Image 1 (cartoon, rainbow, N blue to C red):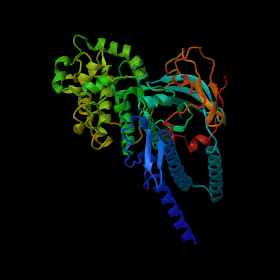
Image 2 (image 1 turned 180 degrees about the horizontal axis):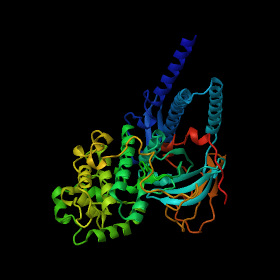
Image 3 (image 1 turned 45 degrees about the horizontal axis):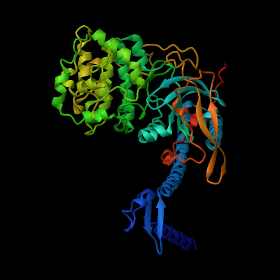
Image 4 (image 1 turned 120 degrees about the vertical axis):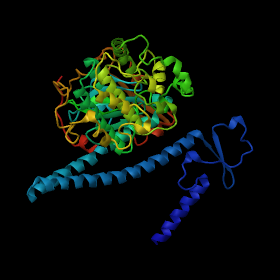
Length: 544
């Protein structure tokens, strides 16, 4: 009887697929049409005509878009169920492993298992609740990038403080950043370890995407370098070692960061390195590049020779170059063009690149730590680009800034041909053999005190971040309040605090009107994520 029912169900599915003109495992967006005598009619643009048994079925782009959304939704729903089951088994296995090492009595073990089961039950309950910006209390704006902003927030029900990154969907679609935003979300979900900033939640509303991550009060390496000018070789060894371990950890997961720069090296409360900004920041991915860079990538190597000069920036000495770099650095961090200073030459060439591009960036950062500015910095991005492409002549060390031969050799081994770079073949294992890293305790480096201690006065201390006094801390978002026909009634909620009345916030752009359809919104399906630790812990609300 079951076999007959299965055959009938299969027959119905095949019949439905045939009627729709869809082959098995084929997405609605890849439907192919039968010959149509009106195919060249300009009035038929945007409509797909298909042959059925007796009549022609016409699918508009909007219909195909909704069909694709339905398919993706179903696929993600069931794949998430499987993933959640696997994760729950892994958490239980991890608990049992820890119970073996703690030397507890059987009764104590049973109590721990019961507590874990209660947490799992609470986690399932909380996962079903919808998370939104109204669940967080805004505290302060702490960062701005080319495609988003970051705020310090506190979750109202737990009291935990987080960093909330906000991205406007319309900007992501318009600037072709969807793949990169998705990549960042996926990396942060998978890379759950000490070298990567931890993401606790991700969610969305019709206007914005939100990433809720751990707040690292130490600020970033860019701010530290601007305060210190240069670092000692001992400090440089520490930070480059930690950054190399962080890069190696994501390479082992199969990811290439491609945006390693001081802005994306965050410091925790103890002053240790964590990587951030996977796929968001400026100037590195193909869809981030300006027309200027696309045009320059077509130029011949000989085109770069005349303007590079001696590679010392003309008559500008190292002190003036450092001052110019510091003067312009902050503006570059917030611009949509960004700075190409840390980008490997093969990334510009668009001929293919691998994990070695992160090793190049590491060498550029090491140079900046010791000298005070990146090796290829110039007054404008065009000149910087030319210097990077002609690195054999332009990678020089100013004689007035003394550094050891071991440090010079390490930088040169980082900034060379991709297949010869230090760390390109065997990762950190190659760095362990380099003389500059002699004496580094690679296994326990995160347990030692940081090279430069971080002073943190409270859980919401933002003294290591920039001030944004002119930004109004408001996020305008849509809440569903009912339906009238096919039109969605919306209400507008302001997520605000006592800030100035002028706002430069991308998330506060014009709202869609009632019934307005945001096409392609389905590309953000399955963006929502909730981490087990985030939903099962409690904190203390901050007193204002």
